[in-house]
Length: 251
Image (tube, rainbow, N blue to C red; front, side, top):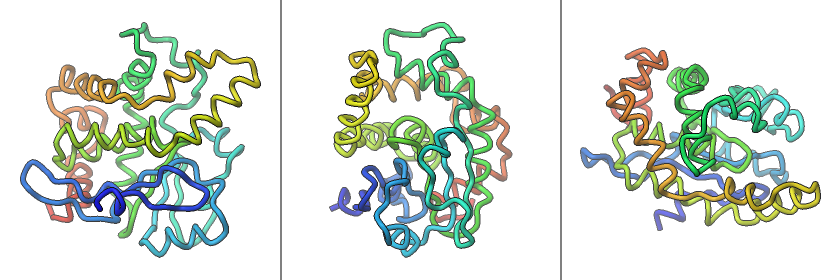
């Protein structure tokens, strides 16, 4: 039942999910329709945007690069009824842009997540800061598959709300069940272009231990998530506002 409430069946998208319903360490159940995570929405069927608006959507944050956005436009850009922000987690998703840091493991997906969390803290500050100041209503944030960039932001939000690590990782791993058609499509495109589909396939998985290790790196370097976010430049007021929005309780 919770899964049915969490996954919004939107025609033209695969991985639209609600962060509500999880239990915090203090026993609170996160309210529904505060934060929605999603894959790219450029193939929404006509009228499906209205379904999201009917769920209370007021803010959309697209985590893709401007180039990705131009190639697959977000249907909520340039509208008067939704506040739209293009806030890329990475400026450039080419492998060369991530190759500046030494590999930290034999897991390229983990290296990607470590780079996002520790090299792109200014972008994370902008994304979470914008969320903390958004007007009342549901906030949807998306990337291409709704797995990696979206998954990192979702994990940070759930951690901030006080959701247990096991549930945070399970939320991340849930993408594997929902994006199988997208993964097949991406691999076929790679195959047609002569890409290394074996290496690419590894990047399209959602292994629980990868997110586990990525989140552990925050604690190793910063001690707590709040300290990490403060170090990224979020103010105490922004952190408190986000937590209140996630939990439905004032700080």
